[in-house]
Image (cartoon, rainbow over all chains, first blue to last red; front, side, top):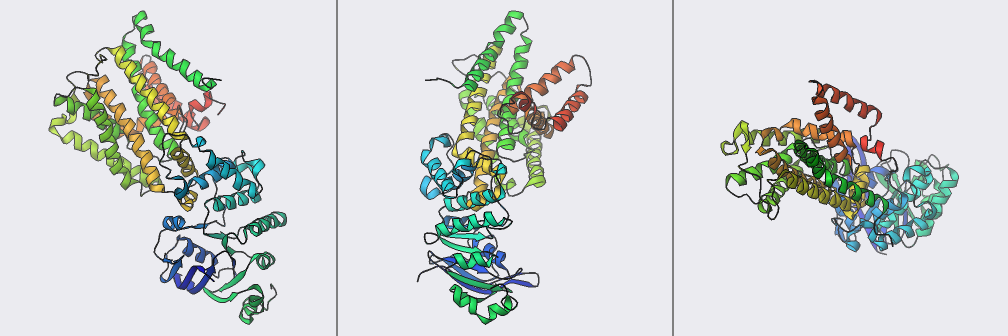
Length: 252
Length: 311
């Protein structure tokens, strides 16, 4: 197996608290890897450390064979690491189509830079077609012309997924994509993630164990800043330490 | 096939009416107002350039007078060296304003919000004090122009010709900014204005995009400054002073931040009010203050937004 992301001994503290206390984790190419753990275990910190929003105090990150420990967020995006946020980060006063088109336009390696001052962006038909295609894949094709602030929360989250996918990341970091959703919207989002499974490497932070065990190829359990177990769902489910961390396994 | 869209035809018609203004004024014997109208167009250009930075780039810059003044001083200093050609002096005014903006912007754009306001103000004031301390720039009195720039084959000494040249440059700049707003760069600016975090996460070079916007706005302000020096026959330190930055910001806010014609509407409203009120009262600034208050409270998107409801 081929590790796309390899994390070794990653540490980061805030004041006296070690939010990451020697994290070892490897994400394989094309797998959906779920990251679970109790509240305050350091899951979001770990996502920040991988995306470059935070730099570690110790340890190293290797992505596709190169050391990215000290790379900026911008440099990591260029290498193909894209994240979504727990709090929806979209362009509220732009149409859905333009939201995704901006994500498509961001791919400099395909389109060249955004420092084009004269040619109208509306003349780049391929960009618009691709944006329409991504919207269609998350089921928002009919709402392409609506402003992002005028669609439901679930649709905004789906839009955000479309934007993340439109950057064609090699590794997609999804931080609680179902946060704040009703059961129906959650199920829709789970189906969307299932639809990219196999074609897209995903590191997924999620609380809903039903969804995690349905989607994940492998699961890592983060407790108090350490990975205490990592492996296939059935292995993790039976792991004694995991059962103890989750209060006698009532959640599993 | 339709040659022009409806809104474009409206703009073209308006442009023709404005272009005919000097002829009408000459026929009425009100030649003084040609100079006033030219001044209005020049401030329209300056306010439009600031509106690009504030409204399109989302950067609240409080030092625009620096670029406006630099344009004027470049023309006056060239004139003092006997270089009268506008073909040389005006592009140089644009270039110098742009280069200074590149420097100021590269440093200022590391900050945000109130700090960005203060640092742009500080840079502009530094330039102001530098210019009044320079003897060959005329110190406190400013630097008079021996004559207007020469722009063969046009005769700028003629007031109406200066008006038409100014109008043509204004039209070119407005069309250019309209195109830029619709380009990839302009779309990226729109994204930045709404959610910088998102643009960064998508991998956009946020800092460079904002810097480019800042420099474009400053370059146009440099051109406006070059025109004003010609109109006034003087490069004046007051054109560099912070109150000038404030006045341009007031124009943008009056007209409408981020509205395509926000700078146009604001400059016409402010200078028009000043002129009209100046004839009936000594307290015109008080009444202008009240108008500004009313606009901010009841029409925060500006006067142009009130007029152009279909947007």
